[in-house]
Image 1 (cartoon, rainbow, N blue to C red):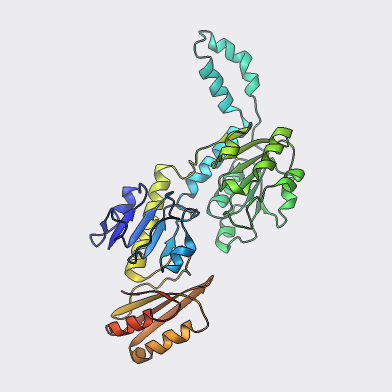
Image 2 (cartoon, rainbow, N blue to C red; image 1 turned 180 degrees about the horizontal axis):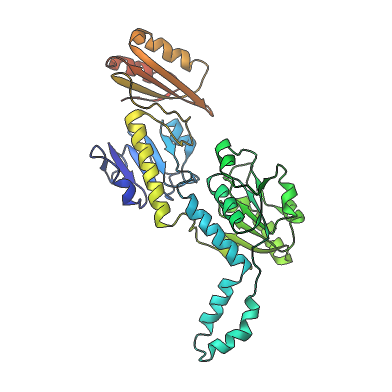
Length: 385
């Protein structure tokens, strides 16, 4: 099995690959791809490609539907970099509260002053700020990262609100006592000293922070955006900063427009750029790829349904990836009728128009059956394990 890395991937993850997996530089031959930020929208998908693992959570750089149409499963690694991002969010909040950056720049600009210690005493009042103890923060999105941010803010003595209409049971259980869940996001804008965004970029979340939100927001508050730049409307942000409605905007995604605004603390996408995060993402991505190749398990896929199959119960397993239509399931069953007595177990899952079928056979599967399955309308890929 050949794999290709489109970005630098931690060797701690790559070392997990067994001798059955070989690194290749030839993208036309690779069966598996590991990627971080490389833009795959113009990537040529070869017929041998089985899966792509994104070492990180965001998948905007990967054409998910195009991959699905070619029977390529795309994985991401949610939570693997959560602690690294959480720590940077806290750092961003402190940078916005105390003008640490301004103070550092003053020292650098005055480093030739032999009496700098005396000069500091006069200058430092320009960089005075506020403490975060007792302040209110609203965390929008309580997934792997947002939940950790909320818990950390409780430990820092802050009043913490959370908003997430899609929060999972596990995420909810992981939240510390003291975090108040609010079901109406509009109630949070006027009471928050800090608003921390932890949302995916979707049509429904694009420009979620806009003119209407800034009209409600508490004057002098801070927005922390460590998710995606387009969650915040550029022009509305500019007006809010210039008017003092917003005192600071801290972002790990400083686009050209935002990078040129005053009172912005721009961080160059460092959220997951820690040694530990890169290792965790690589380890998780490699394990997902190997589990898919060897068992057909699909965990943390963003374009196909997740299914955990475990060890093969018979001699061979057939994995079928398909695009749903009214006859797909029936057509598969018709082809497999001839091998009905040989099927030990079967599993099927569907999500967002795509399906996964898995069959364990007591005996070796005739190649004619595989060929017949591949000819069915809607079938994207068939693979024997």
